[in-house]
Image 1 (cartoon, rainbow, N blue to C red):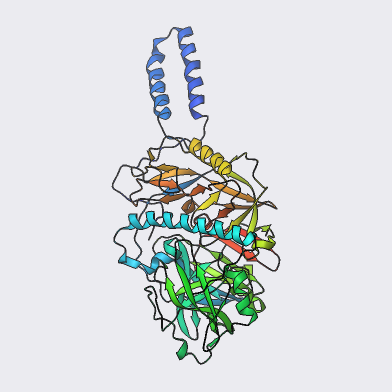
Image 2: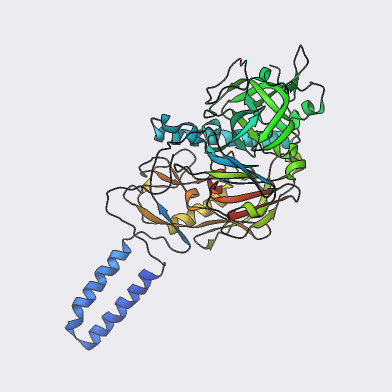
Length: 512
């Protein structure tokens, strides 16, 4: 699916913008000055020129206004014709590199109504954030619930029907395409025999076909770690007394099964005795994938289990949804394998003992089109960075300031109705390209993330008749803000858990 901003139509090109906010003012004073000179000279020969100048001034007055620091947005739509299977991998300079793509590749040409799918994602993303906020509050109060019953190619994907990203790994030699999620810890795949499983593209994992597969006992430390990692305590099964798990997601989706060990292969890098969930009862909109890869910070996450191999380092470049686009998940800390186009700037991870499985950072400022926003909440509360949430959420006062400045700079374009969580929308169907104010996020330590042009607008409708600013407000000031995956596109985002820091650099995502 390509929601890149190039809508190649046979319409007249109507890119209309001013390079500076003072052009109209300059023309006005020029008009007044020349008019005065004409009256003084009493010369009628200047009259035609003055009339032409007045027409020109009125023309610019009616034009759209987008000034300051800008990016050019093209308006295309192309459907995805690729497959979610058989992502590539390679090893380079000690790093394992997995190809990453958007999960829309799992749908391929099977989607009949893209508009409906795009709109549904926003609704589900809102449910995810509501559930995430509730879980954060529960974890902060130390509550848990007992429930009885190498470079890897990175592609964009949909967890719970949202815009998530996928890679391919191997468990016991079987390829599994899984969703990448920094907000989750437990890696899991669907297993047979399955009591209830959603439809996936690849065959279900069969534990009985793997001689290295073994279940985790319910009295083990790994089983006890589930309470901290998932918010749900492990459950003792019978005959044998294995450790059963359950993970619930925001829209009612869930996975239930047994905790197990087996060999995981990340490209050509083996991980022996890897702990994962073998899902026997799974339900939800997981987009045809085999499961999920947890990149959180608890002891059972992939990052922790591979610390001896990769040193607690990983990074990704999330690609757009354009057909053929791919990025990468790099496991290991060798920055020479990145294809960045700007220097890496680092900010420290903000410690939160009660929410230590998540990644937090301190947002100290935002600029729109070169204009720095003024808000007293900057730098006072930590923000969560998450690859599984789609749309960035800001505290209400902060979002209000961003929205006002964006509307001020991106004025004159036809408006469109708000949709779901997005309230700043435009009708750009008559345009082939427009200049859009650049949005930059500043973090503690002078780190900066420039939001790529593909992360500024969300297309509610594929004909660009309803295009919305891809940021939203939280409901309350005391909720935790989220830096989501839509704004992380075409960035190299680096996680150094050993040094407790996060890095950002611009990069046109590509696996090659």
